[in-house]
Image (cartoon, rainbow over all chains, first blue to last red; front, side, top):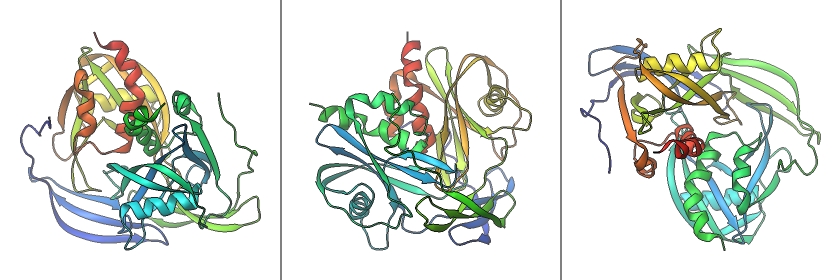
Amino acid sequence: MFIPPKQAKQKPIITHTKQVAKTRIFEVEELDLEFSNGEKRTFERLVAGANGAVMIVAILDNEFLLLIREYSAGTHDYQLAFPKGLMESGETVEQAANRELMEEVGFGANKFTVMKQMTLAPGYLTHRMNLLFAESLYEEKRQGDEPEELEVVKWRLDELDKLIEQPDFTEARSVAALFLAQKIIQSKIK
Amino acid sequence: MFIPPKQAKQKPIITHTKQVAKTRIFEVEELDLEFSNGEKRTFERLVAGANGAVMIVAILDNEFLLLIREYSAGTHDYQLAFPKGLMESGETVEQAANRELMEEVGFGANKFTVMKQMTLAPGYLTHRMNLLFAESLYEEKRQGDEPEELEVVKWRLDELDKLIEQPDFTEARSVAALFLAQKIIQSKIK
């Protein structure tokens, strides 16, 4: 049951775009927009890399979810979150997810299920992230490019309510991922 | 039950910061970091405005959640999401939430409950968002600064499963908000 817009709205027309800033990792684009009602506005958005990103909810032994605790420069603290990362050129979603799992938590997975493609803040970020569920894990560690070893946290499936209450589990993407994985997780609990 | 880090990690030291870009709405900061193991890295992060932000899950007549469908420049499409916005200088979290509700969906609320402070992408954004639950609504419309009228969508509480499946309900913050509000919502359903 898709509830469509009351009146199918015409998207605004992008009449002009201009790069207004570029740093080592960020690119800001300015958009001149003309809305269907004639209103004109200039918006800015942050442009993500071309390859997209993945986040992985991985289940180990039908007993644990695998998380990492990592330094986050934006908030200057350590945050608990699901493994994630940017896709590399030429990788499929599953290949990127498997590589990130190996680099960040030291496991590969024989089975991936794509759960949803999420956006982050679609008003001003072009970023999209593929959310995957990973199961049938095997140990395999690959070297990532982290400045210090990531702490891998095994979280018991029967204590997921507690996970949401953790003061360092604040990332909207990870909270959303946990929500979207719940049905699959429930079906796995012995 | 807070599961603390295995070894309490020393946060990296920020040895130097520098503004590397500033546009009309974005500011990018470069951080020189020294990790506790001696590794040195230079990171960039996007700096949010000083006042923070709010997102509101509002329940109407114990029967509907109030959402908006709005043009999102980042993804250049219309997205379905909970009302939200930046706090203004001097506002409390509840005042900002009430103003945004009035501007975006045409209701005020007599009761707000702060559910969680979420981050968006703490690795490279300083942004934090206060998530509130709003109830005991009354009609009051205030003029916002939107380029076109927002479409208000009333979503039935007994069809929340369907909401997650909507192709235009992709925003991680909104998915997380729905998850975090579930317990309160369940207690309200007649």
